[in-house]
Image: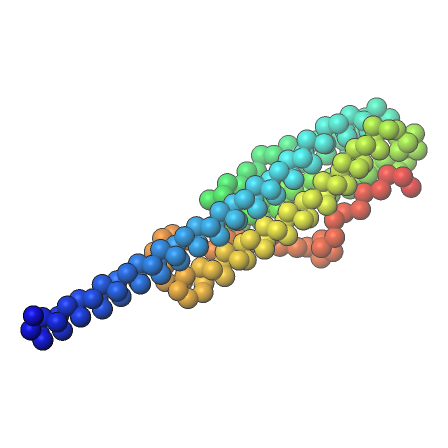
Length: 203
């Protein structure tokens, strides 16, 4: 084999090696972005679970309060209406890159939180209700759920941040647009919302 042939084979070997390395980088980068995207979706599912748990508690809470304070109809109806509105705003994993959609979701959940807060103020006027065992159980469940919502929102933001960093860093940024990986939105904290709402019916 002549020197020219050896040189050609050497060049071909280098080209093949570069192609293999390039494919490996793209493969690895793509798989990393897929894994990060799935982490965001999993974190979002947990957020939805926490909000659904709260929504499931509300009918029992309203019925229990109604048994002691039926004439507080305006407050009870506001909670029921807010729950219905919150349930009507759905977020799919595909919408997680839309800050406006997430903001709308946050707004209706915030309205429900406000309605619940007003209901809890009403409860303070009914000592017998605050001593009711069913109500005390709901208190514990609601308090735990509010804490879980705060935790799951934080975990979602962390997963979204990790994903966003991955698609913006080199070489991920080269492939993100090519494969359709768009940035994810974050939950925006209102002032004072870094702590879960205090739910205390015992005072």
